[in-house]
Image (cartoon, rainbow over the protein chains, first blue to last red):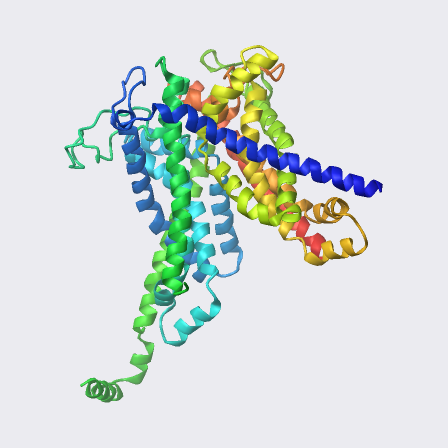
Amino acid sequence: MNAKRTDFLATVVINLIVATVVGILVFLLAYILISGLPHVSWSFLTGTTDAFSGAGGIGVQLFNSFYLLILTMLISVPISLGAGIYLAEYAKDNWRTSLIRSAIEVLSSLPSVVVGLFGFLLFVVKFKIGFSVISGAIALTFFNLPLLTRNIEESLSAVSRSQREAGLSLGLSKWKTEIGIILPVALPGIVTGIVLSAGRVFGEAAALIYTAGQSAPVTNFGDWNPMDPASPLNPFRPAETLAVHIWKVNTEGLANNAAQLSAAASAVLIIAVLLFNLGARLLGNFLYRRVTASK
Amino acid sequence: MEQTNFQLKKQKSQSNDWSARLHHATRATREDWMGKGISYLCIGVIILVVASMLWFITSKGVATFTQNHVSLTKFLFGTNWAPDQGHIGALPMIVGSFAVTFAAAIVATPFAVGTAIFMTEISPNKGRKLLQPVIELLVGIPSVVYGFIGLAVVVPFMRHVVGGSGFGIISATFVLFVMVLPTITSMTVDSLRAVPRHFKEASLALGATRWQTVSRVILRSATPGILTAVIFGMARAFGEALAVQMVIGNAAIMPKNLISPASTLTSQLTTGIGDTIDGTLPNNALWSLALILLLMSLFFNALVRVIAKRGQLKHER
């Protein structure tokens, strides 16, 4: 009887634990959405920030977040694709490969603040580019590369061996096989990984404070010449993102409605990240159906 | 047309030197060279990034000791942090970082293991449909949002319950607990799922209850995996910057209790690095803190490897 009672007790405790965990998430989401959404308006989403107090809209920050995200992806996807193909296809099982794998592991386990400081040291201090979009995008690339590489490698390796053999037996080169046969099959997994990492990049702040900077100069949205200092596309201007803005408003902000501001900005950030997560799943499923011809 | 072309080629090649043809690379080979080149280049970029990161931060971090001649013991065990006046005692930050990391891991592990047991043993169906998305959402919430909620909810709560300012190690622990929970849970789930099915079946066939099976068979054989999960969680907690910085109070003094403002390596770095001038002692001292972070991250990495190796040996025996 005793064993049964212990079993019952343990089950109750575990159920309580699970209820707590679910409760925490529900509370988090509810708190952010309930306290934030009422303050989200069109003028908040598109308005400009008062440079001194940090009050006002988040239009520029929102644009910066997306611009940085796109630049980061443009840099990191090709590199991690090449690296993933290397690991899945060309890497032999020897000490050199295991060294490379550990290097990638080390990079992925580095705290993002350390990655940000490295970016700061390299671009802002050594190359004197200053706080800029491009410094931020490269710092985010450093932070994104290991995860994306591992994801791409896993997706490529998961494709069955017979597909590779089929390609090679047709006289195709290894490279052609990988690009023309394996990559399309692995695409759903890769795209899901890319979109999920986009969500992570979108919410990252620690790596950006000292690379993309903490100021969002008002830009002229009628000017799309990337070389122009006032253009929003200029990669050499400082660009505070939404996540950095939330941090800044909370720690140094002088706005008297800082709590409301950051609640609203957090709500926008959370919704964006949720959309990324949802989008990853939908896009992955859609692509899976397309390439595998299964209903 | 194609055939004649082919025949022409054939004749041509027969008249040509066969060995020259055989020694020339085919199109496929050249493609492979190109592909190899591209992928080697990409992996080279990553290696270069890692190497230069390690090199730059190490060389910056040791400058405190080689250029400013601060003694290592004074840095590691000194308790007075006032870099402007030349006092570089990093112990308050080191203690702060370890305190929040261990506290968060201790609080989070039971929750994570409990959730993982629920997901794998008690109700796999609900686990997949309800808890998997919950875990993924918790991972997805950006750290500044955790920091904001810590500032808006946890700090006032602590102020109300235990008094003081509300800023301090205990608030940071609360925030980090929620942040490392999904990391530890999802890795624990993986390691519980990896336990061979016949272990569980054998135990149940002996008449063991579910809890007996879970606690004495499944958890025990998954121990290396669970330890790895906890270490990953600790690594995340140790390196987390903004969420901690927002709720810990950022006072570079030895933490006397859990409810007074303290600081961690990461919080000191985030607040300090922008205000110091490159090459000066206050700046170098901060880079030394970054070096500690880097070394700890390497240490956690090595620890995971050791555990993985030991776990493997056990299974093979």
